[in-house]
Length: 157
Image (cartoon, rainbow, N blue to C red; front, side, top):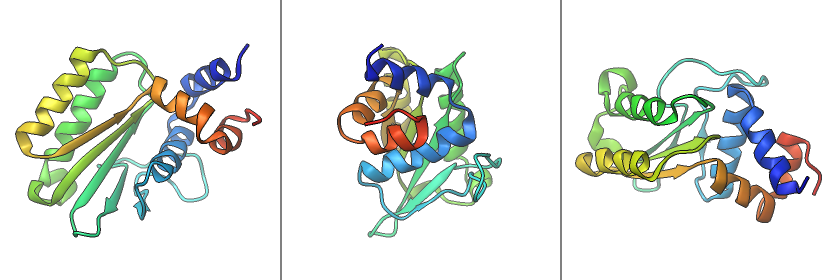
């Protein structure tokens, strides 16, 4: 089996806590700095309830929210629900005007139609969105960030 396939298989098998730590490390490598993983238990591969999973304060003072999921059955529905929670100032304590971007990481597939629907919801609110799914993350772990594949998935370089 190729390393690429090993990476994909390992990603699909990850539990939520470990995937969240990988996803935060991954988006850090992608250029999102100063990550505050408020939905992750410090020192353990466990998650805490709340929205968002992580946030990043930008230089301009605006926020980037990050949501990560390992839901394999209905990823589009889960992501849409996460997005609606991010838009809800009663859940986040943050007004919509302070959110610049929402980043999603997931370890499954998403149809083009479902992805477009998420982009359209954000566009209506004037918020950018970035979605990193199984395929894109796999390519990056294989080509650009093999240290993450080794550290989180046990797949040597």
